[in-house]
Image 1 (cartoon, rainbow, N blue to C red):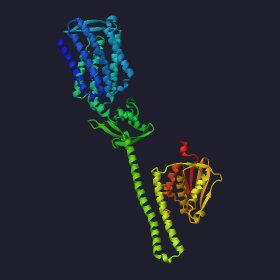
Image 2: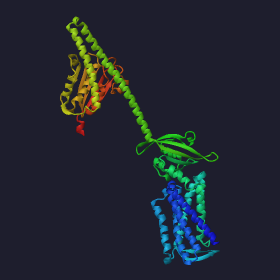
Image 3: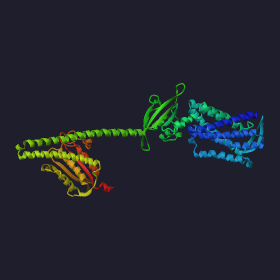
Image 4: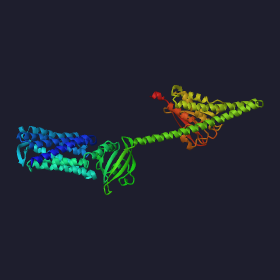
Length: 589
């Protein structure tokens, strides 16, 4: 072989791999994790080819042997970085655990030491001699025991790289398939030449020349098939860093690739996702939409699942991949986490409902207040005009009746104002819980007595209580709101002559207050909204009231640590039961 031809080939090899190294550095942002192995591989190949050229070109035997030793740096580095490049390129870098990386680097490091110290032990090569092939004079080595260990190691490295490429090539289609085929061809040439050199089937190692062909294939693919920038561009920029999960499916509906976001969504590593069927993954998510068969007709859907005790909502969008003949060769599924959007929609719906309820509440307030004030005001005005115009014709009893009517209507308006003010103070926190230990029976009796403002009402109220009184933590102002509203309602909604019973009893650690009437009762359809503001049952008719009393009772009991329940049947009366704890909520804390 002419020396000029060998130098020409090796010079091209150095130039091509230098170009690849600079290209990888220039496109580092696009290549991502692939860039580093590509640069290192290129530099090691450049070192190997350079010292191989020096070994052939320099005439001094001692310098030939020195160049032979130095090229081992490139040989050892190229084997390891070649595998790293393949692993990162086919997105199998998760296979490269820290332990495996240490094992990969350990043997080349030992081999480099063995090569440097070989004159002392001859384990790396037992003999070096110069051989001629035409104008070429190169070093031929006879491998020693450790040399064969390294040869086996190098073949294992190449075999692992080819295995991953074959596996990846099996699922690749179109442009990606041609990329991987070219890369496979690029590895075959140096593999064959290393076998020939190891078994002395050639006079000297032709691997640097084979790497020239490899460099040509790689360089060609940089511009023809975008070997190391198109796939990483799509994978590293668009897929690896995207917030949405992405699954690439093959023609059989099995996962071919999964980006990190998809791994996070499914909670598994990429190696556990690849090879699984899409329908099986959806089954794991407790949902079957959209199934593989439905992707073409219904390309999107929502999945509700759970993760760590929290509900997770996912939106799936699937698109088929077609080849040149319009046949489906794969599918891409985008998985978007829409949990935040769903939660915001839920909050907006709740806010809308609350706004509607508030508007309805305002409307009821205006209606009820207008009605409840207009009626007594009209009665007061009428009574006042009659007194004003016909006072001289009225006797003392008629005048007293009119003044009683005016007083009653004023009391009704005052009660409405008190209810509104009490509710406002409760909701604004102006009424808080400040208990003091008081005798329960005596206190409730006093509050009931406050309502007996005339003899007729006093005769209607029946009070039953245990003979033994006990002291309880009672906030009298809050309990007054409870007793006043419950007893007033019982009197108002009962026929004038029928009694109202207020009964006290002790049960376990609770004081129970029962207020029972024999009035109109509460229709079943109104019972669920009885404690809503301004809500009144349908059967109250023209009886005055604001619809605030029971809501005030409920909020006052909440502050007091108490509860309220009722039993009612339309037309047969109602019993409200209030339970007060024997211990103060403040004391419990």
